Image 1 (cartoon, rainbow, N blue to C red):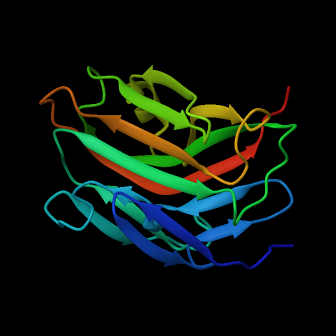
Image 2: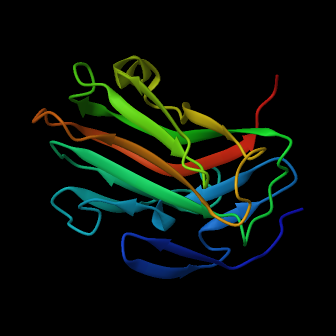
Length: 186
């Protein structure tokens, strides 16, 4: 059973009201649509396009398709005042992506995944995503990091990001459906 809710997202000077259209929550996980994320150049159709997805593929029916960029930055926030998470659990952040047949530029520059908690702790990891292209016709889960709230201010925000902003290497051909946040299984 999914809970319906409305959540305020605040990021980089922008505030938007995100309804159940962009967030789905069930007993096991939280889904955040790519539409609820701040995607640099996301409103410029030369670089990103919003693409319709079937309900079999996505609980949102919409994804962000990267046409081409030379640096990528996707950021999302989870407001802990609106969404209550168990402070005794560890959570993992999973990006749901699909690579198109003509995807390019993912073989030489690592993508940085970062998770920041309200107490200022940051966890960062990097990964070259070329491996995922081999199974590009399927939706894939890319591990974006993990966080715990045991020592955090439970009234702040958790921020997740996926970026590569240090090279001029062009990349494209990926569809981002969204993010899943779920308790980490030991």
